[in-house]
Image (cartoon, rainbow, N blue to C red):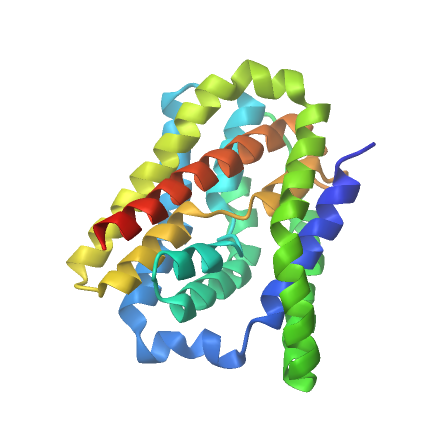
Length: 278
């Protein structure tokens, strides 16, 4: 069984579920509170890919793993970040806005960053196919979800309630299937990629906290930015890596699986620590 046929519907459902929770006003938060939005987007769209590239080079990752590591670094924030922000008593409105904005902006930044990464190795990147796949799997489901939310708000709330409960089990299913099919590659590289992924998450969470302090953001805004920077859309990275239209290489998806595991462990610890401090 090719895991791509699980990845594609899971990613589409996650993006549709995100759209059900969005309003056009979520994209206008920049006007009323520009500092936390700018800090979050800089961390998500600039620092993460940059640190991912530096760590991949420092750890001398082979071609496929290097591309996969940079790929997970330049993907947008994951929809689960909204739940983690709520648990950490963060700013949920800011979290939703950052997830939405990063999901849209990365339609352009992922092809650009991955094009630069592929230029350094021997792997070809079909940029237009990547762009079109992201439009179909990311942008269109978000827009449909927003349209349903605007036209039938009660139905949207009911669907969102169901899908939000299914999201995590679906991701676990995806990770399990992918692990079974690629257990040798994951086993061979788990220690090295586990260290690299943990370093990427912790370094960028620290940078996010530092930016928040420099900009004198509130505690709830700071916690939200730290979580948003740590939580990546692993399903999208796996979809790009495994897609027969783009890389068609399951080894490139290995860093995303390991990152997904480490980010949940680290963010659960972070949320627990915030509760202990309170």
